[in-house]
Amino acid sequence: MGVAGKRSIASLQSPPSSRMINNTNANETDCKEVKIPSQIFFAIAMMTLGENLLVVVAVIRNRKLHSPMYCFICSLALFNTISSLSKTWENIMLAFTNTGHLDKRGESIRKVDDVTDSLLCMSFIGSIFSFVAIAVDRYITIFHALRYHNIMTMKRSLMILAFIWTFCGLSGVVMVMFFHTVVIITCLIVFFLVSLVLILFLYLHMFLLARHHAWKITALSGGATQQRSDLRGVLTLTILFGVFVACWSPFFLHLLIIMVCPQNPYCECYRSLFEVNLVFLMSHAVIDPAIYAFRSAELRRTFRKMFLCCISTPCHSLA
Image 1 (cartoon, one colour):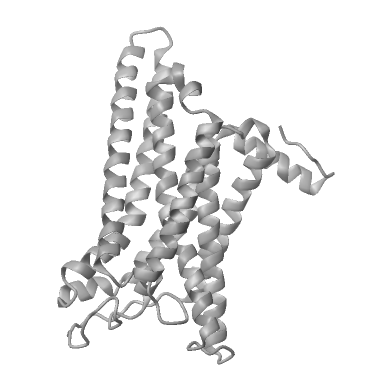
Image 2: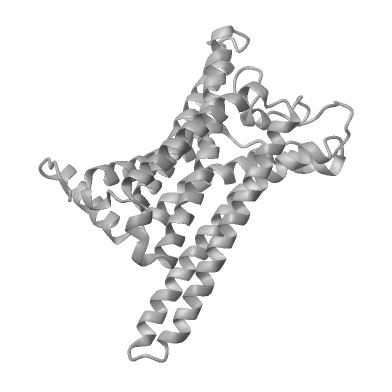
């Protein structure tokens, strides 16, 4: 994805004959690499940037949203914003390089490219961490409702966020430095699979609890309305997990194929779809705000107030 020689996740966007995707140029396949216009990546980045910045500003300005749950949502939005800015900057550098205004072999370009790659790696890992944190928060809300405010305090939430950002920042640097090693790719795949299993367990447990409550509520007066509400909550959780798997799995399958069958022609065909997989991965950052934020009544009210403030008189508090 970058301008200089790549050593990170972003390098996987290069043609299948590159060092990271193939260890040989002798592979023969009828599958040509599917190229996605840079304008599409730029458009997705701009949509992601706008939506997630809107969420961050809304959470900061509305004191009612200063809770652990919205802190994790805000963290996810910030990681998505960093990813968008990195991708946008990369597209700008590619445009200047393709027109001959920048030397892609220059030392300064390589350093800027490494920084961009580090930010992209950090945002990818941070998105998964934030997603897991949100799942754990919802799990505690349902199964330990009476003790939730004692378990998930703002101080504890901020400590969790500090750990996530520190770990992701260091991971981004390490991955750029040593991404050519199999160990780093293996760790990334294992991390994704473990996160997937953990999220699946939490959501499945919450789904079973919601169904159990629905059965009990049907026996009570006015239970139909509450049952529909529970089912809507279960549907939301299902959508969250389904979108996460659909957007991220193709990319990590690509990483797995790199290690398992680097010279197989059939695997080569799948690797030719890398840029399509990258579009799915980036689209998750566009869908996130719609699922996590725009389904929140409080956030929708905050957005309306922000819009009214923009078209009328300045306002300083939305709480």
